[in-house]
Length: 125
Image 1 (cartoon, helix red, strand yellow):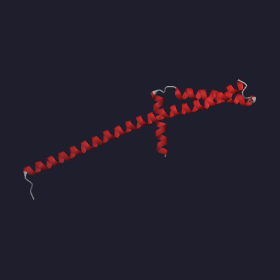
Image 2: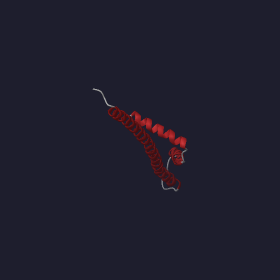
Image 3: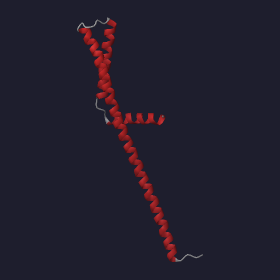
Image 4: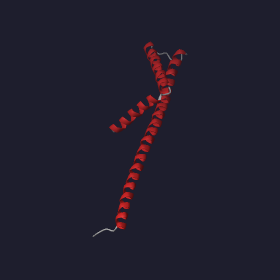
């Protein structure tokens, strides 16, 4: 079998088209993979910020309960032992500190570190 010039040209164009299609598919896969990583990071960031906000609200509720116990003692509604009162005041201060920590704005570097930690936790599962 001897190929004619026209057949050789067609074969050459077929090979070029196949290579170009492969390159196009590889490029599209790369772009999709890159987009997937960006979306994953954005979702992780949103989840982290939502979790921090939720945790701050939970601690605020706990602080209200502790503060009510302290207020009841101060108003004479309920008498607490000195050790218990000191413990409640200490816990209230700890809660206030945690709330301040969870509600403070995060820098981009801090967010990136939290995202990495979250992704490492996900990789371990």
